[in-house]
Each structure stands twice: as structure tokens, then as C-alpha cells.
Amino acid sequence: MNKVYINAASICVATPNQQDATGSWLKVDLPKITNKLLSPNATRRMSKAVKMGIFCSLEAVNHLDAATLDGILVGSSKGCLIDSDKFLQSIVEQQEEFLSPTPFIQSTHNTVAGQIALLIKNRGYNMTYSQGRISFESAVLDAYIQLKMNERNTLLVGAVDELSDISIKISSALDEAASQYKTTGSSQSEGAGFFVFSNLQDQHTRAELTDISIYPATTKLSSEDQVLAFLKKNDLSAEQIDAIVYGSENTENPFDTSWTNFNKTTKINYQLLVCRFDTDVVFALDLALKLLHHQTLVPKSSPTENGSRSYQKILICNFGEQNSLMLLSGC
Image (cartoon, rainbow, N blue to C red; front, side, top):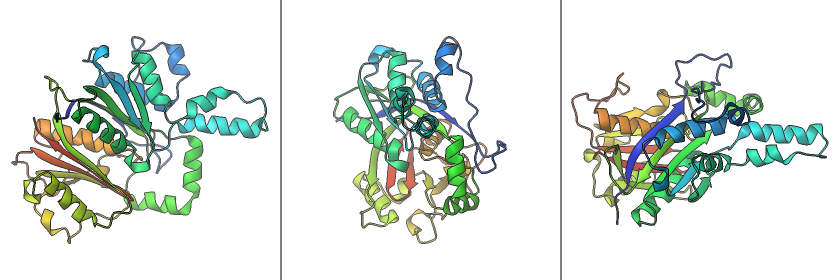
């Protein structure tokens, strides 16, 4: 079977040092989309989720011949919230009569993947996944299988999640959600990330995606046992992993003192470096790619990081109701 490479990456996220009047909620400052990419009329009609998706996807594929892209896969936990709000508001205000279908059409989760395909004139495989925190990993797993089996050669894979004013008000009103965000020390936000996956290595190749697994909530193995089993499947031991980039749906550190197998491994909590959103694991993947390329993190982001070591094997862990693991290798 073929190897799977990551040949390009682009993310659009908010960092914790940015200031915002909403306090625990931080919106992304979207980079300006120039007229060369889209007309002003087109961007005015697009939601922020679509704009984030288009910006990152175009930046990721800027070195590709559009004809070589075999498909687009997008993960989104909540879809286009702003257009969903507009549609629901219109139902109430117009008492369920004379409703425009446009807000509903634009509110669906696959809007981003469809708009990207229309923009770059891609008629290939087009799929959207909505599986909560593992939405992005679900899209990556689909791409990984197809590329390994040589069913396709190059795929654009990404994730998008946005905030809306109504969703902020609703979530803030929930005591459980509000207390959760206060204890994490990180703002709730929005963001996007897109990557070019291929079974063809080129001069832009960032890393190899060696393996990926998603463990269902019904799995009886503990999180540590899942990680060890995943490494064993790839003929690796804990000592052979140079760094672990991890995040958690909960506030507790999953790498507590009981994880004795990883005491000497560099561990980086990526959620301390980025504002949280459901598919924020795109930031973890981008961070791991930069670590493999630059061989160091500046500023130093982990108390266990050893600046003199070489990074060749990096494990990305996304802990939650369902755990996901991605293993990257340097090229």
C-alpha cells in the first residue's frame, strides 16, 4: 500500500493573547480576501465559515494544478451557525410562512465543501463529516484509506467551525458550559484549517501521516492503553515517540502521573496555545508539522520540551468521549 504525505497546510485561528470584548468568546480576525480570489459581491454573500474555508483552502492548494486535486473532505462540528440562526429566526418572524430557502441551503454542514469545489471548479469526491470533536479526524481517516489504497492521489482535507452571536448567548446562559470555559483558562473561539494529503511526495512535503485511529466511546481500553496499542500496531514503543501534541475535551490533564510510560516524552498541550473550538485539532496538526520542519518550538511551549533533541515521530492525541490518534513521521 502507498504512503500518505501532507504536502501543504494553512490554518486560520485565534490565539489566547488576542483581546475581545466578549470575554470568554473570541472571534477570528479573518485575513482579507483579495479581488484576485473572489469578487466583493461574492464575499459579501458568504458566511464567515465559508470565508475561512475558502481562504485556508486556496492558500493550501496554491502550488497545485487544480486538475490534480481528486476531491475535497471537510469536517465541521456545528456547520454554518450564522446561516442556521438566520433560517431559524425567519421561521419565527414569518410564522413559518413564505420562507426563503437560501438561508437553509447555506446553513447545511456541506456548504463549505461545496463552495470550495465551485470556486476551484473541482468535480471530484466531495464529502463532509460532522462527528463533534472528531469531525476533522473522520475526514482525515477517509482520505487516509483512499490514498493508501490508491483510489485517489491528492485530496484537500480540512475543518471549519464558526461562532454566531446567538450561539454565544445560548452557550453563555448554560451554567455548565460557562463554568467549563472559565476553568480551562482558554477562550471559546472559531477557526479553520486545510491540508493537502497525497500519496505522491513532492518538494513541498511536510511529513508522512503514518497512521490514524479513532476509538469509539464503547472501547473498554483506557486512554493510555489505547495509545500503547496504537504504537504497538506501528511497531513503536513509548520511548520512540519524540513528542506528543495533545488536547482534551475535559479540563483535566490526561497525562497524569499514572502515565509512567511517557514520563520522559515531550508533551505539548496545544490548547494552551490556541483558543478552543470543536475542531481545534487542526491547530495541533499544523503545530506538529512545524515542529517536524523546524525541529524546535519558539517560544518554548512545554515544560518537558528538550530543545536539543531531534523530532522524527510525533503523536497527536485528541482526548474526549471518543479518542483520536494521529502518528506523523518526518520525511
